[in-house]
Length: 119
Image 1: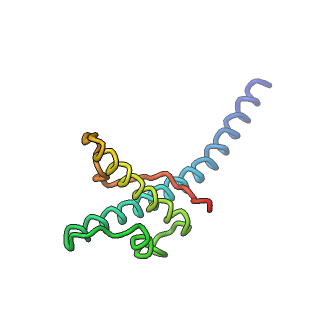
Image 2 (image 1 turned 30 degrees about the horizontal axis):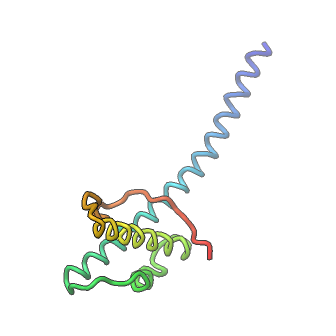
Image 3 (image 1 turned 60 degrees about the horizontal axis):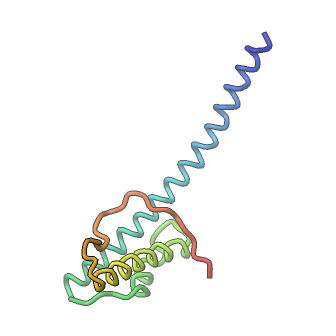
């Protein structure tokens, strides 16, 4: 009888923990999806302006355009834009060194790891 009681308590605790984890997981996924929206917006703005006007916008200009438009903390949104520009810059340097197999960012992201810049 004691074994059955322990088994039931274990299941109840497991479901309680799973329910809490599901809420935290849902929150994390929503934040990752919001960060991906910031990445995709930075990509779209960067490429659209170059395609129409033939000039690249600076990192600060894109940060200004995206400021306050997403449900992320401002530093997290800025960190996503900084990561996008770091990727572009790293790819540019590799191309100058002859490593042309590396591609510039070109795909839409569905999830992006949320970070916070610490300055």
